[in-house]
Every structure is written in structure tokens, then in C-alpha cells.
Length: 93
Image 1: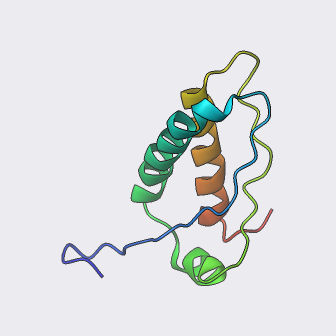
Image 2: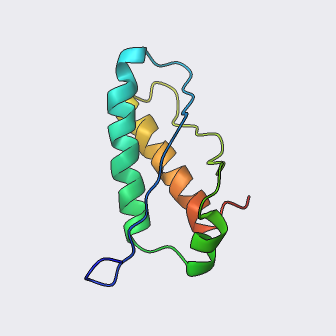
């Protein structure tokens, strides 16, 4: 636990499937996802949700609809919001 009383949450994403983006967009999508997920989780995650997802092999963030013509940053932010919401509810749908 951090000195400020906040927990450190370590999230590893093994696979993110994106349709309609070039391979060169991966870095921008990934960075936007990381930033948005950090923002969402910094508001706190309920202890039961942490217990439910701790060590989980898979947490389904669902399908992300960033809208037609959305750029890589918008898609990454939408993915971060969706995954953050899934983690906050303990991975349940």
C-alpha cells in the first residue's frame, strides 16, 4: 500500500482487439487507454470489486463503440472507460 493510504492497482492487458485502425495507431490507442483507465480508477475501486478481480485471468471490458471516424485517442479513452467500469463492478456484467 502506498504511503498516502491508496492501493496500487496493477493491470496487465494481454490483448486488445481493434477493428478499423492501422497497426501504427496502437501506441496512441494504448496510451489513451492507460491514461483514461488511471483516471477512472483513481476515483477508487470498491474493496469487493478488488477482491473479485484480483488475479483474474480475464475481465471483459465489453465492446467499445467510439463512434464513426473516432481517432485512436478517442478509441483508447473509450476502452479505458469501459475497462475501468468493469473493474469497478468486479468484472460482472
